[in-house]
Length: 178
Image 1 (cartoon, rainbow, N blue to C red):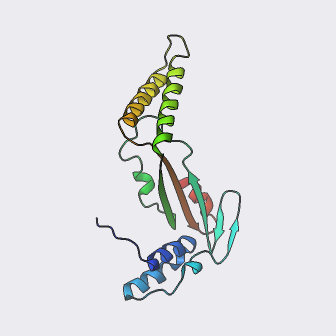
Image 2 (cartoon, rainbow, N blue to C red):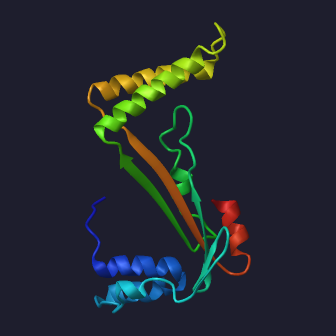
Image 3 (cartoon, rainbow, N blue to C red):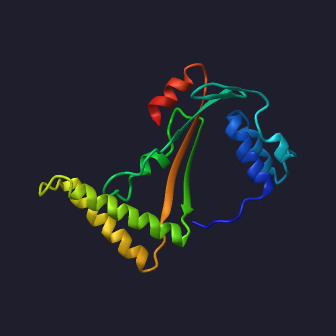
């Protein structure tokens, strides 16, 4: 499909409905009528919020956020994110964010070298008894170091998912659906 930069009005509407899913209809109606909604960025946040250890209650809804803590080991199938990106019945809103942070060239070289040393050390730890996972990690590290030496960059990848629910039992539902 086609893409276009979002307008300031659209950004405000997205942010506001993240906190108040019930407001989506009002924003949709304004957009369909070709009129602005009149909110500013300062008004996009929650009217009220209560922060807890693992969730945030805001404007009649509750959100919980999960962060990928480590990259998947091994090959990743092409459609691995499909269930996460598909609509999820029971959630008022779901936001999935992929964050890419590129390493500077010198830092990338240091990381590739360190990863190769670590993988080589682990592969040689058991005096001739190389475990399959260590051999695979060493092959991956060698390939990464070769690619980096040939000019490829290294990128850190993070994944953050926020589920927003309404109702008293919403948080329990969000925990099971994400």
